[in-house]
Image (cartoon, rainbow, N blue to C red; front, side):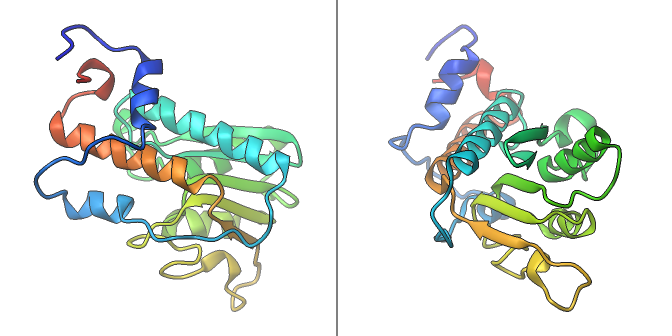
Length: 207
């Protein structure tokens, strides 16, 4: 076992390693809710812009993992213009609402000096939960693109589809599955390390 701190780059490489061996023992229900993925086929071929934006969201997720946060990242963009980038900050802030998507929406609104994010797209590495799906609706986003679906908490097509619910006064386009494998592997490996090293920041105790 390595005795010294590991670099963030090495932590990212190991998080994204699809060959990581599974750990023994049961994973908690909360963890299972996040890593028990189901396929989410893309509804259309992704553009180069979509891929670039999701990769930026994944970088934010990797940074969050290096700080001990659940690795979820989000980007709000208007075309090719990035308005905000965010990642989970619940551990750092002690705020249960500090999800990546919600923070990205708040910061994008500050950037444009207004709450209406019309003609903007939210990119998220994990399917939004009920809270974040509701925020996507409330902010009048035009489109939501996510990577990995969440069968236990996903409210953008899995358990429900709040952004596309025609009973509401605003709907937005929802597309899932973009870079799904990378996002799912990042989350799965994060929880494997957390299971082995409970209460420790992953970057300090890599095997």
